[in-house]
Image (cartoon, rainbow, N blue to C red; front, side, top):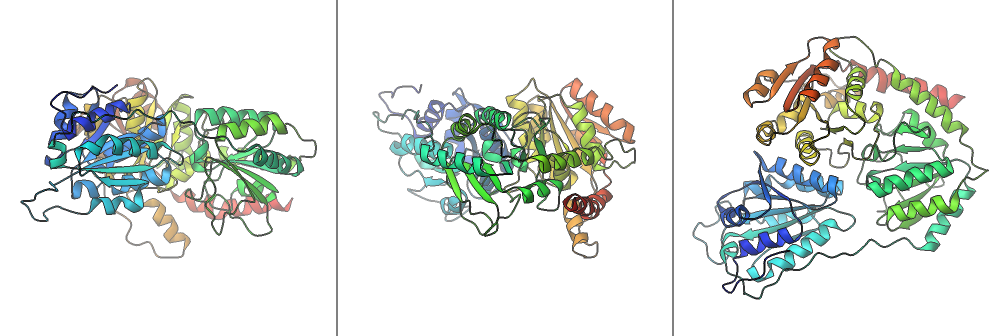
Length: 560
């Protein structure tokens, strides 16, 4: 509970920090500037921990991931001008990914100015298309109301980013002594209407080949438990989007695979065969795993909010309300239907399972992606967390890495920003110091926020960073070749990553043979501290598997 007002009143900065305390904020991730000094002083004597980052983008990625993993609002802080613009990518990351996050930026005094327009941008307007709410605070007395509104909007479905600008003079201004702080709301998400739930049950009973799709919005503990119940009582097979991985243990006998590719994979044979897709927790922000067509299969949209109508997504029925409650209703009122036929889906599953074992023990060096994924899965415990940056390897991990629990595979298939993997893993390691955590990054993505190695070492995190090294922007090279262009403009050189890690006080390791990969990772995980493992990758498998082999195998499967 926040402190009561003193007779002399509190400064805007003190009021701001007390309001954050009242919201239960644990951390502020920050790269402060001179415009934040009053706020920094108020933070110094608070129970909120300041996490000093080396770049504002990383501070934002950590705050967003805090929101993703806890459901509470993550908070980050920057100064004005370039500090605030460096938060833009993180704002989009949180907004598209549905992660509750508050960004606080400083500003020059607004009641008087002695520096002209030096470093001054309209940050509030800059943030408007990237956030649910953005405001400049122009009076210290309004701080508690604006913070409560920001937290409310950041947390409400669909969660996302919000922004407050605190000018230097408002931070130093004394608020009225009777200015009070608002208590957080205990509002609960409404349940879907019984009519819409009964209509969904009717559609499910009438279908011959229903299929469940699990998206990012289902990645919550209660939803996970409800979905397991639904699958078990109905026997309906399921697949996941990239951001839905792990909601149901992927060792489940009804799991058909991940829609990592847009089309042409085994799971798309199942999607094409389905006459009804129960779409749980997905929206069009995440890259579509399938496209709807007029007159095609029916889709039931089960989510916290209504579907955004899109040319490729226009569900025939919507169940809008708390997802866990909706799924539990379907489980309790639908049950097993004798007219359902899942035989074709089980053929797809058998083909998927066979293919995912292919080359998992390949002994080539540089290492093929299938072997990298297999070795990581073998060394990670069931509750271990991997955080993927964005690159070619993300497709391989989404397809080939079985997730056993929700939020144990952190990846971004909404903004799909490079540079997020390391900060996301750092946040997971902070929140779960007793779990094994691994950041999996390409060399390109790692270098975009590699300076945060110093932050990880300073925080004494237990973290392994696996760098998949091809000295190129590998996914774009694959796309370039797919479209028939010459290899051009995408290769570069890297620093010596082992020396680089050692320079930060981390432990650097270089894999020099395929047999070294698994023991090196296992030793790094067991030892604790920050470890960087550099492994060269052979991406020739991209073309063979994704462009050639899958097309032949799925054609054979569809011809049966």
